[in-house]
Length: 313
Image (tube, rainbow, N blue to C red; front, side, top):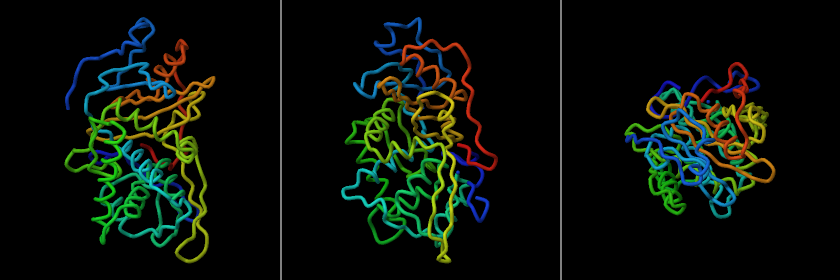
């Protein structure tokens, strides 16, 4: 990604066309300190791992230091939609040219939504989380915000994101963006706060299904009245690379660096982790998960490659 705060690369594949501060020293949690000899060394500026079942800390490194979070922001956008009372996931949303213009202006990651196409809310969730589509996130914000203009509705939606953060006890988090593109830089969180968010979101079956998918093909109603098939690949390369990985979201930005919210389940135990600003995010996520599952890391993680032309984030 080349723009300021959030992640983006090339256009996602679409059938019929071609088409995603405050630094402190490391802190190891009491739980991890008990086995400090086995605690992993990670290059992340901030990292956190929790047991999703108990909520207990497994590993921690500057977990309460506020940092830019790039497109991991979209995790909250999707959580707000899914937590909306009476949400209709089959509701159809018409893609506006405004969403495409926004992506083009910001050089943002995209689901390559086509103007006039009609996609369901459920499909927009996939478009937001897999190729990290800022256009899909914009469509959700515009649909689920309130107000008489697009600007008012997106502002309203961001307010809902902040209200949700407060309700989840995310005390060191602030959103000024629905997708992580923050001109003012007031879009930040901490590893601990984002782990709380992920733990909450993963309780929703739809969220779990979306973030676990390595890829998806979605048929939407094209503007012409025909059918367009969107093909999206998950930018989270931990899926298919680490056995038991189940999600969650990538993010990359100039200020944020490479970020990752991740989860994995083994033998009935689920771990949720967060890495902020780490050029070795996948390898370090693997180390953290091995530590949490009581497994010694003996080899380098072989990261799943994405198809040519797929979004990178």
